[in-house]
Image 1 (tube, rainbow, N blue to C red):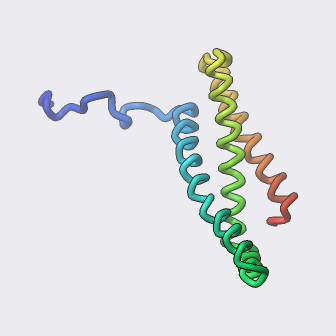
Image 2: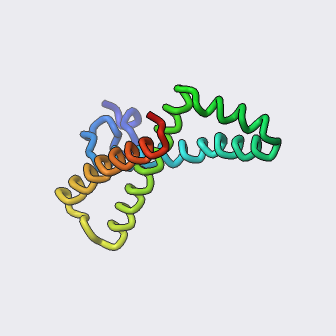
Image 3: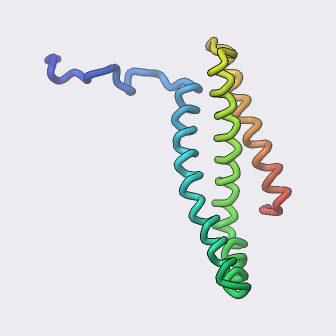
Length: 127
């Protein structure tokens, strides 16, 4: 292979995906998705300022099944983003940096975020 056809840096295709890299990428994705979900929150506030009639329409729309799924995914993204951020702060203090403990902590973040999301969704009567 000619030198000009080689990638400039190690390419993603040669690496085996690890839990830490997957969680890092998903942390960035959930951060973006949470920012986009603010549109729903702001539209609810806007409907609230327009009056009871518009807010009741907003509540009817929010009780539809597709939006309940979106709300659950937003809750899941929030719980995951929060817990994974705490994991990064723990790493910043120098704890759990070896491969085994960072892998265990990564899986723990996933499990706790799913459990807490389901608990919040049940509390909010999404199901």
